Image (cartoon, rainbow, N blue to C red; front, side, top):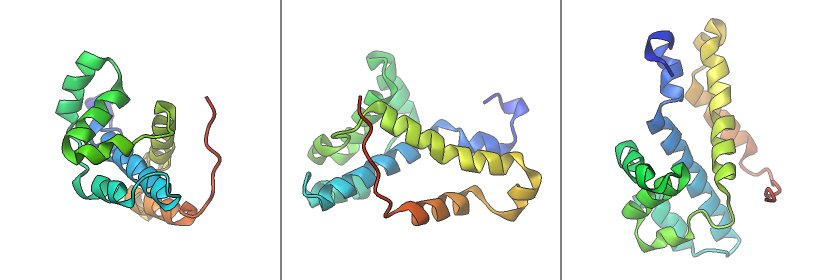
Length: 144
């Protein structure tokens, strides 16, 4: 986003810190689902929620070396989560994370673009309502 052309609420949606926070939530929810299925230990999913933290500057530093944004993110996440991080991202592709994040950001973006909608509801409540409404919706994994 070019700051001088962006509304603050729009820039916040596409800010790297927001993107990485959403990636963390996606990975944590995936761990929860896999733990419920018995694919990974429940303690691992719990550790991601409790110790999961990401730092945009550190991710950028790692990405300069790895040349891969999601690997840089996962590496930084592992630095905080510890050994349980080996269960994060299992069965997922980078596109699963990126596409889900993009979809998550599109709804608040359309809200931020519309002055009437922007006053009617916040992007946080929109995202929360969507998450609650689709929490138990089964989905088919993407094939490579």
